[in-house]
Amino acid sequence: MENKQIQQLIKAATEQLAYSYAPYSRFCVGAALLAKNGMLFTGCNIENAAYTPSNCAERTAFFKAVSEGVKEFSAICVVGGKDGELTEYTPPCGVCRQVMMEFCDPEEFEIILAVDTEQYRIFRLKELLPLGFGPDNL
Ligand code: THU
Image 1 (cartoon, rainbow, N blue to C red):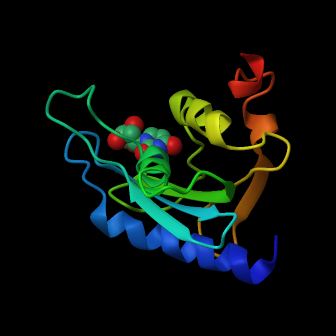
Image 2 (cartoon, helix red, strand yellow):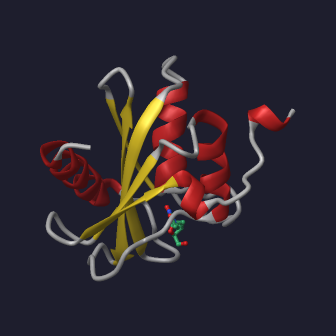
């Protein structure tokens, strides 16, 4: 992936922190999902007073895309931190990794974990979800 595109994804994910609705954990997360057709879908975490209906930033981005007919993706960037302060990487939770497994090629799909535009790491889905169960297993 080109450096320019990585920077663009990090910036878009970071902008999402402003929309994060996290009054319970105060842990704000932003995501930017790049579709294979070049479209960018953003997302933030959305919490709920009943706790379990909360949605992660990554799934917000995926579900926005799929609900608009886009189902092929090349990369996602995730940023997060307490009160929106970015100090460490925020790896996707297990549920979000499983949602990625549904729509992405685990050997190809890239997950960019970032603190800022200079501090980031890129993983393939396969690294974060080894031996994942997906549509090919059925
Ligand atoms: N969260 C995300 O949105 N994405 C992640 O990758 C990790 C966790 C959210 C869920 C919850 O709103 C808050 O962060 C604390 O767990």
